[in-house]
Amino acid sequence: MVIDTIQRQMFYRVSNNIDEDLKIKGRFIVFEGLDGAGTTTQTALLANWLDANGMDVIPTKEPTDGLWGGIIRGILKGEVDAHPLSLCHAFMADRIDHIQKLQSRVLKLDSPVVLSDRYHLSYLAYQQKDTNKDLSWLYVTQQGLPLPDITVFLDASPYTCYERMKRSRITSERFENIEALERIYEGYISAIDLLIREGQNIKVVDGSLSINEIHEKTLSLLSDYFNK
Image (cartoon, rainbow, N blue to C red; front, side):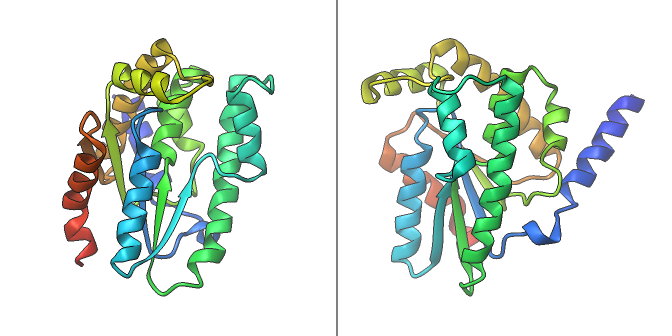
């Protein structure tokens, strides 16, 4: 009980101690889900909808296309041999670099909407299973970084995602097999439970629906947020 209390106090400090030089101006929305769940597609659809409705949208993603993102992709493709903890810290280096570059873009806009294909929920889910580190340890490594205003989790089963990837991809990466997807899905569930208890706003959408149905469902869930 004492340990649990200490951990919860630690989580609270992490959630509410964002470094001033890493804050993101405007609204921050993230799509999350397993590989094959459709996060990239839904990010693009929402970005197009926001743009068509006169909003200043900045679509982005993690891993990024920067130096650290390139290293991560090399590891995931098996082109670079690295310990799981090296990959874990590469994700965090990529995120800090990502936030710093986003800042210069959002400051030029009056009311920007940053829309990211993956962010910290994927990090918690994937690295929890890859590094065998406790969720609490991974959570603390993100201290000082901004949190999304809303996270949309596309809840597609490991089997559904695996079948989609088999149909659409020629090669597979490190986590793109059914066994890994099943472990990571469990990681998502535990991470979502933690983040909701810590007060983060997570919307769950049925990822087995069609592309258009998921898009419409997302718009419905976010309608009040954009009408504020």
